[in-house]
Image (tube, rainbow, N blue to C red; front, side):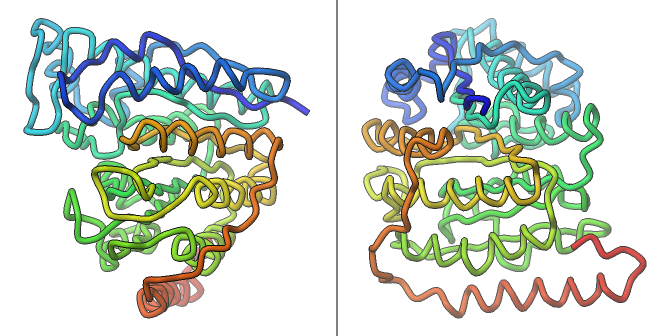
Length: 352
């Protein structure tokens, strides 16, 4: 069986938003150590490549790409209050996007069974013409467009479990039924989007599914959402590819949020998506690092996911009991989705 790929490189340390910034180079430094420790027959390192301007342009305007490139002339450039670049940030962001595209190509060609791109800066907040939330280019969205253009993918699932809603990814595919965007996130919270009512528009109506969770949710709540919402809805969609915006800031020790997920919880979520990919996508699944700002929690959580991907551990369901009542929320999400499915069944198109 082919190994799992890990895309990582010391060049990702070059993006430096400044001292005391949460999205620091240290995030990748601890993951470089981890990748070196785990590399073996089941896990192999895959070097990244830089994305081309054309590839970035599938999700961002030329004027915006010029803006990000222009920041290479400044030691520090604040694109907004949270998103700061250094001289090497543009090149690092190209490498992050291109690294993910190389991973997708390698999985598509059967060189690897699956993979995880441990890259930075993150991407899921980046809009077509705006950087925000530490993000410059929307890597997962660029990846989905790559699969559509080069492999003819017509049903792509993007699962976003970052604690913050991926507003940029949602915006990129809000009218597009060929991408099912599914997000679990703390709400209300930055960036303020991701309500249940945000479900897509036009042909994409019903293909955006938001599960806005209250603060305090842990393994039990997240896995209840996976068992009752994520996996059933994704199964009806029958994705040809599974892409995962894997943020580890829902961890109970993360300083930027208020969730209670453990390493075992992330492993169990990954195991659910890996099984989904085996059922519908020929095993084609590619994880992408988004947030996660406690270094020890980030390292141990990524390790659990990687070992689960490589089949080195069978991730059991955590035994933590539920503490936050989310049944009403789940029933509301499912009711909205069922209304869309009934409309589909009466139309000429019934994708899932």
